[in-house]
Length: 137
Image (cartoon, rainbow, N blue to C red; front, side, top):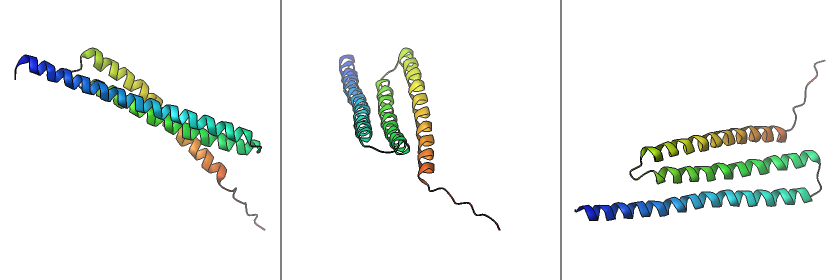
C-alpha cells in the first residue's frame, strides 16, 4: 500500500466517522426535542384540566421525571458522538476537549439521574395511602 492510498483510506474513515457523529448527535438532539415537545404538551393539557393543587403537583412531577429521562438519554447520545469524534488519530487538543465535554455532560447526567430518583421516590411516597395508626387500649 502506498502513501496516497493510505491517506485516501484515512480520509474516507474520517469522513465516515464524521457522518456517523452527525447522525448520532442529531439523534440525541431529536430525543431532547421530542422530550421537550412531549413535556410541554402534557404540561399544557394538565394545566387545562381543573384539578386540585395536589393533583397538579403530582402530574407536574411526573412530567418533570419523563422530561429528565429524555434529557439523560439525549445527553448520552451527545457524549457518544463526542467519543466517536476522537476515535481516529486524536491529538492532545481533541483529547482535552473530549475530557472537558465528557466531564460536564457526565456531571449533568449524574445530577439529572439523582434528581429523577429523588422525584420518583417522592412521587411513589405520595401515591401510597397513609398508614393508619393503631391506638393501644
